[in-house]
Structure formats: C-alpha cells, structure tokens
Amino acid sequence: MAGTAGETPELIKVHSGAVEVPYDWHCGPYWSRFFRGLRDEKKIYATKCPSCGRVYIPPREVCGPCFARMDEWVEVGPEGVIEMFTVVRLPYTNPSTGEPLSVPYTDVYVRLDGADTSLMHWLDETDEKKIAVGMRVRAVFRDKRTGTMHDIEHFKLI
Amino acid sequence: MPRPVAIIGCGQTKHLSRRRDVSQPELIAEAAWKAMEDANVTPDEVDAVVVGNMQGFGGVAQPDLWIGDWIGAPGKPVMRVTTGGTTGGTVAQAGYYHVASGLHNVVLAVAWEKHSDSKESGATTGLGHVGFGAQVNLFRCGMGLKGFIATSGVGMAAGVAVYQAMYYMHRSGCGIEHFDMVAAKSRRNAAKNKYAHLQWPNCTPEDIAKTEMVAYPFRYGHVCPASDGAAALVFADGNTARKRVRTPAWVKGLASITDEENQLISESGGGVGIIDSSEQMGARVAAQKAYKMAGIRDPQKEIDVAELYQPFPNQELLFAEKLGLFDEGKAWLALEKGETDIDGRLPCDPSGGVMSTNAIGAAAMLRILECALQVMGKAEEHQVPKKVNIAVAHGWGGSTNYNTVTVLGSSPD
Ligand SMILES: [Zn+2]
Image (cartoon, rainbow over all chains, first blue to last red; front, side):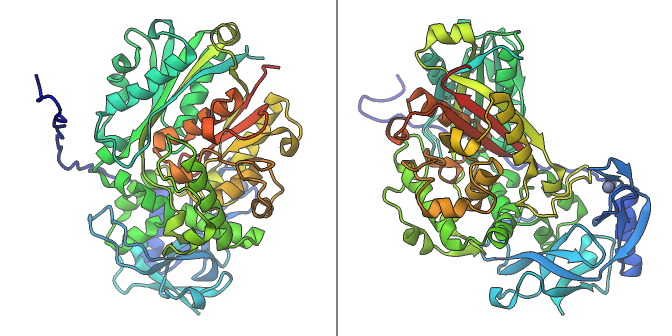
C-alpha cells in the first residue's frame, strides 16, 4: 500500500519546461504602409471608408459596418486629444521577458486629429492629477526608427 | 421553433487558487459526475458531450482528445468549443443546440480552468492584461510587432477593463466608491456560496476602499482572482426533463453576438476596439435577441435575478444596463439603493460572480449554472428570497468583443 495508516500520502508534481512559440507575422499592404509612414516620414497614415467616411487608425482594408474596401489614405495627427487614460501602478510580469514591468506608467487612448478611432499609446506624465480626458497631446517620434509602433516613443501633453 | 430544452443537472467544484489535490481530468470529472448525479442520469444515458476551456491555459493542448473517458463519454461524440472568456457560455449554448436540434436527448456540457498548472505567460499574466495592461505597454519592454500581435491574441482583453471603467464613469457619473460597493457586495455574496473562491463575510465598501490603487480607477480590492475550478450542466429535451427532475430550468432564449467595435486589434488586423470599450453593443443586441426568443417585453419588470460576467466591478454596472435591467447610466443609482443586493429588487450576481470566482473557461458557464440553481431553488444560502420565474445569465470575452446571453425560466411556456 502507498502509505502508512494515518499519514496523508504524498502528492507528486511533475514540472514541464518552457515552451517557445516562434512564428512570423506578415503585415500586409495596409499595416506596412502605416509602419513605413512612421519610419520614413514621421507621419501617421489612416484609411477612410468610401461609404460612411469613417477614418480608421491603425489603417485597415475593410470597414466592418459597411463591409466596404477602403483605398483612400489620409494623414492624421500628430496631435490629438486624450480620450481615456490610466496610470498603471502594479508591477505585473512582462510576458516577453518574465521580468516585472517598471511602474508607474501611463496608457492613453489618443483620438488623433482627423481620425474616428483612437490609438493606444503611452503618455510621459504619471501624475493622475495633471492628466484629464480632453487634454491635447502630440506624438514624439524617435530619432532612430525601424518601422514599428516604437517609432512613436510616446505622447506628450501640449 | 426549436423543441423545448431544459437544464436538469448542475455540478461545480470548489474553486481555489490552487487545486493541487487533483489532476486536471480529476478536477473536470468532479464537476461532470456531480451534474449527472444532480440530473438523475447515468453516463450511459448521455448522448453527447460538449467541452471547453481557454485555449492554451492549464498548460495543455486539445483536451477534447483525451477528456472523454474521464467524464463518461467513451464512444460518444465530444465537441470542443473555445471562445476566450465566453467559453463556458458558448459550451453551454452548444449543449442546448445539440438537444434543441432533435439530434440528441441528453447532453453533458463541461467547462473548466486549472490556472495554477499554467506556467506560460499568456495565462499567468492574463488577468493582469485584462485589468491593467495595454498591448502598447509591452512595446516599452522591447516587445516588437510580433509580440504585439501575439498579445493581441492572448491577453487581449488587455487594458479593456480599466478603460471601460473610465469610460463608464465618464458617461454615467458614477464614482470609484460605487466600484467599492460592487466589490464588497460580491465578496459578501461569495461568503454565502460554498463553492466560491474569494469569500469575505460582512465585507464593506470601506474595507475595499482601504486597498491599494493598482491602475486608476481600480484598487486591488476590485480585482477578480485566478481560480482553479470546473462546471458542468446536463441539458435534456422536455419529456426527459419532466421525468428526471422536479424543477427543470427551461432554456427560454439565448444569443451570442460579436461586436468588432469592442474588439482590440487582433491577429486578423481586424478589430477597432478603440472607440469606447464600455459601448458593448454586442451585449445589448444579444440581450434583445434572447429576450425576443423568450417572449420578454420588459426586462426591468420580468427578470427576477441576473448573473453578469463581472471580473471587474464596472462590468456589473455597465452590463446590467446593456442587458436592459436598468436604464443606461443608471445602474449605480440602483446599486446605491440596494436594488442589486441579494435581497434587493433585482439581485445581480448573488453567487459572488466572476469578481469572486474566475476559472476563466468555466466562468461564463457558472453564470448559467447559478441562474439554473436560482430557478430550481437549489442555491442554498445564496438563494434569492423570492420566487424566481426568469433569470438571465451573461458572458463576456472573446477578444473583448463577444457576448453570450441566456435566459432561463421556471416554465417552458
Ligand atoms: Zn464604412
């Protein structure tokens, strides 16, 4: 028998190691144009629906409600308005590194001038009392740009 | 019209941070056996099985391929459904469809999560993502585009709850103190539910208000736990239901709706998710369809109890409004008056809800299960002190865009 009477039998745990999930993502023509715009021109490009006129950022091919193909490109920003924000104070784990995130930092939804959807990014201000919905902000581009969302470093209050 | 279908059996496990006492199939089997016993059916009488958990969580892949024998289904059809946070709601609705179609008479639906077995970042930080993150944060730590897309798929309720809360406060005029009230009510209700995870008898809003701010406007006390647990339901056709149990919980109406406006950017490059994350029109549309099917004209008057998917306290308020239980922007006023208390006019989450117990794959099924218990009068200490004729269950998840609504009733007509 497994154990002596009166003892709780030991429960065994088996540990399995780390799993990697490498894969490629092909951005396609719309996101590629968006990232090229950030990298090469420091400009933010969006697409406009020919049917309802809504301007999408990040740009995409299809307007869902209209099921219409968008092929008109428009420039939006680099200034806009804070739609919503939060200051994160919990140092939860960064899934990329397994390290705790450094806090505090501020997330914002920015409604860029000329856009009908909002872009999620960071704000370089972490005092809730100094931030309000409706404040104007501007994108700060990095000097060295590689064609990613990192090419905008953060937004700053104007 | 589909033929009448009822829930005749409910089973759930005790929920804890770590169910280290059992293996994953043993955890699932515990709920499945309880449901079959409750339904007064043997495994031989079950025609088909629907299962589901959150994809990749619990450190296992394709559990549908090995779980059948553990839950009384050898030699039977087993279908797996997984729709993120709504998984349990979708599994239950698929169980309903199996019977309503006339293809099967008795169907077992099982949903679960064993979070604590997960070591992968998507699961362990998933709730952090839901609550506080935003995928763009991750760029800061050196995440590239691929990681951005990956987290879009994995933790992509990312940051939504915080933003939802901010939008909801902005729209409705409610304050953080109302989130404290929802959280305290959930903890108190959970203390009456022997299966619930975070139980706190006599918890007050002041207790919650003392907890640390983690991401404005959320305090630590506003956050759901990550639970290990499983839930199971037995669905049966009308004739079988009447023969097997005294009070079946009849499925009166149901719907599930995806709403891309509320979906964050996903692997398809689709999803707008950046309009207003408290909009959740999918919940409103799903409720309208389910109510129409159930013959409900005035949900504010006809619904007796609601189980809403509320891992964060703003969600109980805004989804109660989207489900038509209160006027738009007014649920927090009803909360102040005690209308949503367990003994109130329209109790919301008398079980303690997802705020208190969140085994993700099971959480949306538990909303339906808890409604079934209320209809059957079997909720024990957290039974609402009135006759329950109609109960509504809600699930929220997918990629933050998906809603399930299920209406149960005490009579099939
Ligand atoms: Zn359009």
